[in-house]
Amino acid sequence: MRLGLQQFYQQMDSQLASIYLLSGDEPQQMMEAADAIRARARQEGYDEREVFTADKDFNWQSLVESSNSMSLFAQRRILDLRMPSGKPGREGSQALRDYAERPPEDTILLIQTGKLEKGADKSSWYKALDAAGVVVQIWPLDLKQTQQWVSSRAQKMGLRLNREATDFIAERVEGNLLAAAQELDKLLLLHGETELDMEAVLSSVADQSRYSVFDLVDAVLAGEKRRCLRLLEGLRAEGVEPILILWGLAREIRGLYDMGRRVQRGEAVEQVMASARVWNQRKPLVRQALSRLNSTQLQDLLRRCAEIDRSVKGVGEGSVWDELLQLIICACGDCLFVRTATT
Image (cartoon, rainbow, N blue to C red):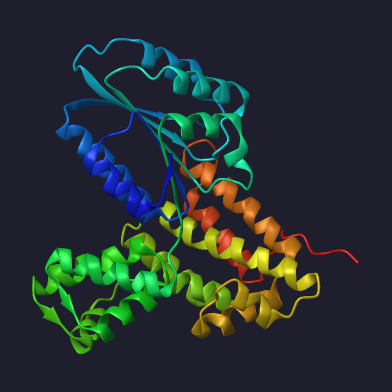
């Protein structure tokens, strides 16, 4: 059963499904949806939880064996399956189909994946999960939706923001709800449950000398190499997780690659940016990056992002921070190793 995010929350309040498939590339909403399932399940006595990560070396038989075995510690349990690629492969597809045909009693299977490729909903494993459980595709929010999300979350936290302050935070985070949540947490910590206007929000932002992942992304778009290096060092000193930095950079590079290919096919830059929903204040930065990096270079940068992702997960070799540094230097257009387009 395919549900929108709000329908999913409403359905879960009335009844838990035996299978949930959450997919999307908006981490905050993904995390909150998964947390909501686990919290609701604990209320119903699902006290045991097993976590599986379906990477390329994953043994799908371990999931099968776990689903067939009796729990030693609790009668009810959650099987928490992380499938980052969204591609279970032949063995995984069969395992998921078999599971969906005969879900074990007193067990919830929670599957979390990244954004699924086009046509994934026509695969046999997806259809089987759809028929047996609940499928939720989670999409990034546009500016208006982000404003609504910020306003709603602030109210739940006891913060009362006026319209101007709400809009400022939404525009500042540019659709990244994880950053928005952090901003609201910071405001609550600084001011407590109170009413805040634009002046108070600006003052709080100005008083904090924290570096921002999004400042780094903007500096990369502008090709400001020295500023990028300072920002990266600041983020590292503050203990920011490399995966968050990689997420921000990879997201931006992927968008540039998609837009760059369209520009190369002859579409006007302004039309491409409008179609990609690039906000007006960011168009000069995006235009600058597109003029500096061709599609071949951007494809190379995406490959580097994938390599860094493996390093973050402990699969690849090398220093994650050194690799991030090289990625940023290359994205600024100053890298000998980025392949250039041939004529």
